[in-house]
Image (cartoon, rainbow, N blue to C red; front, side, top):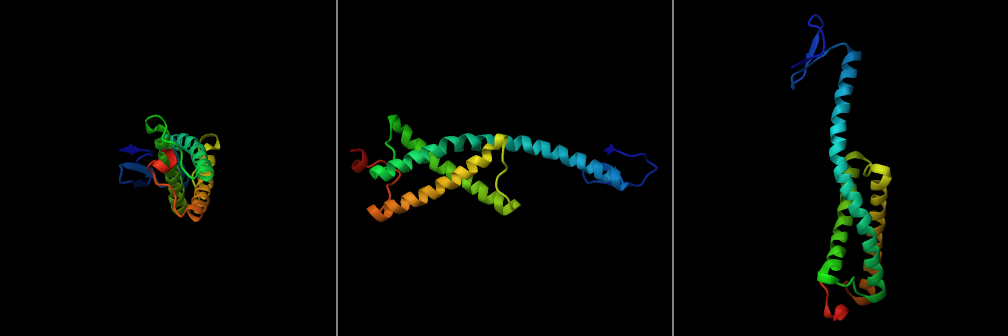
Length: 162
């Protein structure tokens, strides 16, 4: 138990074993210090997730742009590449952007605002680019569907890469 006050003053006990002085000013100050310590540990853990999302978004959004341009100009997605690596990158990029948009929407419903800016404002930028990529996906896939009657599947076909 952490005792933050002399025994002669009224005390307030917390279930975690902390004891606080009931003096309002000191009580608020002490709670604020504890709250700041908790935020610091939460910020550290979320920074890793934010960095992963930033790196993923900075790679995924241009790949999706390339994929959509290729789809619009050739009617096919990206070629599979050596060992299927380019096709795999394309598929993972679509999933990453959908994940970022999903995370953003979830955060928006829980907090009333989108994702935090992150280091150097990059997470906010990735969030915005991901929404733009999603809009571009809907437009290009819509055009492709109207013109061709379908969109290409996730696997390469002989029609595109025969």
